[in-house]
Length: 272
Length: 286
Image (cartoon, rainbow over all chains, first blue to last red; front, side, top):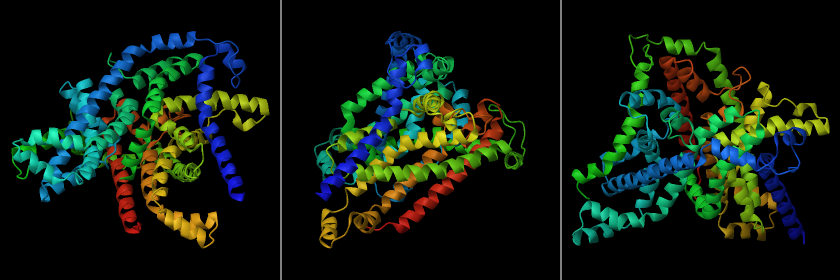
């Protein structure tokens, strides 16, 4: 009896906290559907009349389809090369034990200590000098910043891929690339999902790096566009909030589809 | 792949090149140029330590450093308190556990910029409305003073990162063998005793991970700072990361900004290394 009552109490606290956690989203969506005057007179209530035109205008001014595609292209290509190249590197390091491999591995791990702000100024200067302040340069930068954690995770996972697999593949006549691609890489699928999830969350939402590299161009990603849009409409909350809501929709859809994998991936990435 | 031949280097080449050009070379290059009068393109001469001397007399930088430190302390305490509490709630075998976990984690998928803008609305418009209705003066004018800007940022970060840290605590809480808890039950331990004597020592490694994560996230914060307070009023809520960005790209003082960036790197590295060292010593194996 006592146990049941206690459980009920914990459950009630949990639900209360969940409501508090959701309030900012509730306020964003309800106010995005109001007219400007309606927000001014009544911020807390539901909309008096639904003003979907806010969403239409925000969608157009954000050029949302174009910006969405830019974000998608940059995020997908970065993750693709991070996964391929980091898993290859981790494979080489794991299968060649020795001082050199140890040193290279430590080098990558140590690089995780370097904050982005400490390298951004020379980074922009160097890439600017060779005309690489464009989406291709940006994707290469994501490989540079993202490979350390990915190699670290792959390196841990490689330990449980038996070396007998390599030997069998070699006997069957595979060269090192074939061995890796057809035999080893498929074994690493669970950790590839983790690496992909951690990097999607980071790259999709990243603001500072892309603002320095592709800011002002027509390849701008969602956060960059949103920043400009918000600056224009700070005093017109109905439009600003509609823009924010639109930007969040893809993320929420993704979250509902892959919720389990996302939470498992984050857990794995953080705990290791 | 046994011999360190051509294929070994081919497998490593892409990431080694990327890391070198994106992180290592800029770090060395930047450190070198922080001792010159570099303008982002060329440097005409050495200025020795003068940027470093200047920065320790620069009230804006020192203010940013102090604000960032206080903000990090407040955030770390609150995030870990809420993160552990949420984890304990979610792992109490409730019917709603899955739903709760989903909700608490959600803010972490959304960019800091968007979260900052949403909370700007909450603090500026919603707080003011509630203040009007309830006649509470302190809910007016949020983000327009240094204190409300500070607590605004702390609230935003606590709301966002508690769910992240919760996931870490859950992983460790679920790693506790059931036999231990059952044994404690048989011995007549109360829920509080079970938490203090069994769960707490076993989730200690989770503190390491969470502390490291929250410290590094709070100390390097930029997006939320930009979106929520934009450093205002009068740069009083400007954190170190934003100060570096502004010095470089608004004031165009590249070499000086880079000197700040080098100091920033040293602080972050010292923190991280100390923490890793400490926690490696403290962790108990199951």
